Image (cartoon, rainbow, N blue to C red; front, top):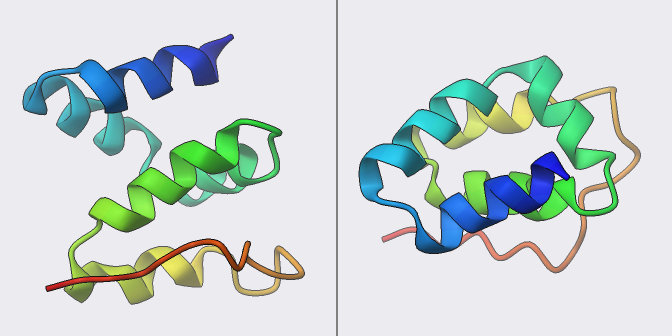
Length: 79
C-alpha cells in the first residue's frame, strides 16, 4: 500500500526523502484524500507535526468545510 511506503519514508527515510515526500503531498487534494484513509491520516498527522508554525494555518485551512472534525489525538506542539 502506498501509505505503508510513505510511513516507512517518514520513519526511516533521509531528510531529503522526507522533504520530497512532504512536497509531493502538501497540496489540498492529497491531504484531504490521505486524511480520509484508514492509514493515511497518520501521514497527515506527521505532515502537520512537521509543518512550521507559520505555515500551519494554511495547511489546516485545507480542511475547512471538508471534514467534520480533526482527530483529537493530534498534538500540535511547536517550539
